[in-house]
Image 1 (tube, rainbow, N blue to C red):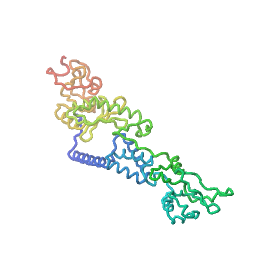
Image 2 (image 1 turned 60 degrees about the vertical axis):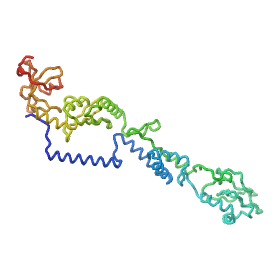
Image 3 (image 1 turned 135 degrees about the vertical axis):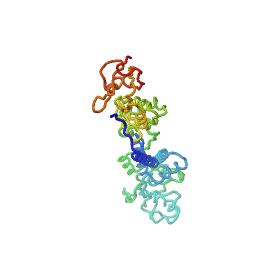
Image 4 (image 1 turned 90 degrees about the vertical axis):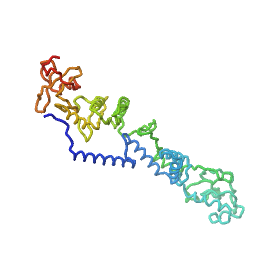
Amino acid sequence: MTTVPEIRSAVEANLAEQLSAFAREFVADLEAQGRLVEAGGAGVLERLRTQVEAGQNCPEAYHAAVDTIVEDCGYPSEVAMRIATALNRKGLIPGDDVEPRHDHDHDHDHDHDHAHGPDARHDHDHAHGPDARHDHAHAPGPDHREQVPGGEDSEPRHDRAPAPVPDHREQVPGGEDPEPRHDRASIALPLVPPARGAIVLHLADRGAGRAMAEHGAAPVPQRVDGQVPRVRPAAARSRPVGWGSASARAVSVAASLQSDHLARLEAMQIKADGERVTVAIKATCLDDWEYWLDAIGAPRNVRTRTAGHAQVAAGTLDGVAVHLTAHGVPELLQEASDTATDPFFLWGRIYDLGMGQVDRADRIWLSLGRRQDERGMPLLVLRGTDGPPYPLASIVMAHGPLAATPLPSGGMAGDSA
C-alpha cells in the first residue's frame, strides 16, 4: 500500500494550534520582561551581571547620578553607568563610600567653631587667652599645639599645606614627646584660609588600598552593539561561553545563506544558533520546499518529519549543521498526494508513479506497477530498454532528482525511445 504523510485529525490540529498560541504568548511575555536572550546572549548576561555587582559597591550618590543621566539626558543605562563610574573614580561623586572617611571628618566640622569663640576651649586646655584663637582652623589629631613649660603656646602655623602630615608634635625640653593620641583614625591638616572653597580630592587611605589589592578595581561595563559585543583586546575574555571555531563557522555559513537566499519571498529567517544554523521558510509550493532542501545541503535520501504545520529537515554546509523548518509543506504534500494517480512518498517528496520520471540525464523511467518487497518500494525500468527493473530509491540516489512527465502515448517499458 502506498505510504503518505499522516493526516492530522481535527482534534490534533486544534490542540496544536492552542499549544502554538500558548507558546507565542509565553515567548512574548518573556521578551516583554527582558528575560528572553537570543543566541550568543550568555556574554550579554555576564556583562549585565558584572554591571549590577559593580553598582552594588557604589555610594547612594552613584545610583542617583545614574538615574539622573538616564532620565534627564536620555542616555542608555549602560552609558550612564560608565559615566557615573568614571566620575566616581575621579572622586567627583560625593558620598561616604566614594573614599573611606574617618572620625576626623566629624572633628573637622567643628574646627571653625572652636577657632572663633570661647566655647572651643572644652577640648584644648593648652590654649590660653584670646591671642591663641586665630582665624585658621586647628588640625585634628596629634598635631594640636602642645603645652610647653611656662604656659606659652606654640606659634600658630599659617604656612602649612593641607596635605596629610605624619607627625607635627612639638618637642618639649628634655627630648620627650607629648603623649601620642591613639584615638585618632588619621592625620590631616585643614585648609588654610586662602584655600577655603577649593575642591580637594582625598587620597584613599591604607584600608582602601588593601581592598583594591584584594578585590581589584571595579569593572567597567562594556558597551554592547546588538547581539554580538564589540570585543577589544583588553576584553577578549568577555566572549560568550562556548564560543569557538565551530560557532565562528556557523556565523559564516549563516551570512552566506543570507546573502544568497534571504531575498526569496518564502524566506522568513536565517540565523546562527550556537554551532548550527537555523532556517525558517513559508512555502507556497513544493518547488520552494525542494529548492531549500538543495540550499541547505540536504542529501537526496534526507529523512524529514512533520511537526505540526511544518516539515523539518537537516543538511550540512561547510561542516556546519543547517536545520530547515518549512511551514505549510505538510498541506502541500497532502494536496500533491490527493491529485496524483499513484502517489508514493519518499524522503520528503511525492512521486506520481502514474507518470514518467525524468532523471538529470533526461532519461524517462516508467513504473511497472510492482513493488520490491513488503515495504512497498516501487520498481521502475528505463523507457525503450528491456533492462532489469530498479527500485525507485536506487534510481533517485544514482540519477536524481526526478521530475514527473506525462507518459508517452506508445505505452510502457518496451516502447522505443
